[in-house]
Amino acid sequence: MTTTLSPQRAGLPQAPTLTRVRRSIGERIAPYAYIAPFFLIFAVFSLIPLLFTLYVALFDWNPIGDHTFIGFDNFTRLYDDPRFWNATRNTISIWLLSTVPQLIAALFLAHLLNHARLRFAVLFRMSMVVPYITSVAATAIVFAQLYDRDYGLLNWLLGLGGVEPIDFTQSTWGSRVLIAAMVTWRWFGYTTLLYLASLQAIPREIYESASVDGAGGWKQFRHISIPSLRPVIVFTVVTSTIGGLQIFTEPLLLNPSTPLTCGPTRQCQTLTLLLYEQGFGQYQFGYAAAIGVALLVLVLVVAGINYLLSTRIRPER
Image (cartoon, rainbow, N blue to C red):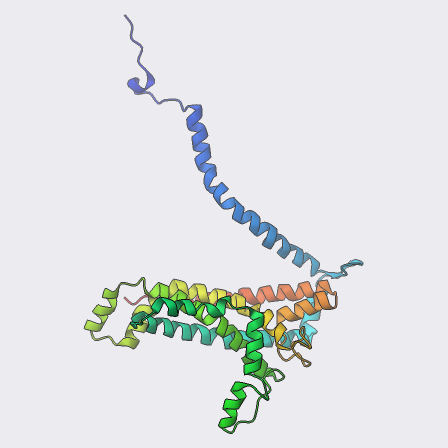
């Protein structure tokens, strides 16, 4: 009597069944299906508009008229336009005045709060995000009153020291300081909470060991806190750079009589305001697109430099 052995008993490789093949294909496709919505949304709302902006920048683009191809003439016009360079200086100045002090102060405050024993700590931390959720329009109104030339609280305090009143809304550096103060007030608490949350993930034993070895507060901050916060510092530096260079609402609301120029002499007009003025104020969409491309390049360059500098932070060995 002859006995037939199955492939499994005979030790022979079993042919893959249709179910296994389908399961294998599904396992391979599943990761791409999970991330596909992000790339679809990115393509529709970011990549396609970006490519279209590059395309429009090569034309003398009239939204209701002809579209004349002019090559790189819009970019040549940028180089010769003093308004563009004025807006670039204002943008970089406001970004430096708002971002650098904000990140440094938030880092120090987060370190202090991490070591302090506070009553109602949760309520205190919740109050720090109030500026973040406050309307930008309301913030602009309040700060305009605080920095008012004749009746503002800040000029009143300066007057006590014998300083002449400063017209913050009409002077170049005064406008920059005022806008930077609004941006700092809005984002300072949010950045502090990001740093504080990361610091609280550091084991207390590390600080206790450092104290036993004789390390003071400054050495602990420098050699433990900052290296441990490296990923969060990189994140906040890059996002603050991107947001700071694209600032729009604060300078728009600073001078209601001349919102698109942020004053009669364009003393605080940023690149985004200049873009909006040329595109939707004067309907020069080709030139506005060229400004947008220049702003993109500026953001990428500055963000890249900040990323390289912030990634140099290394934990102490």
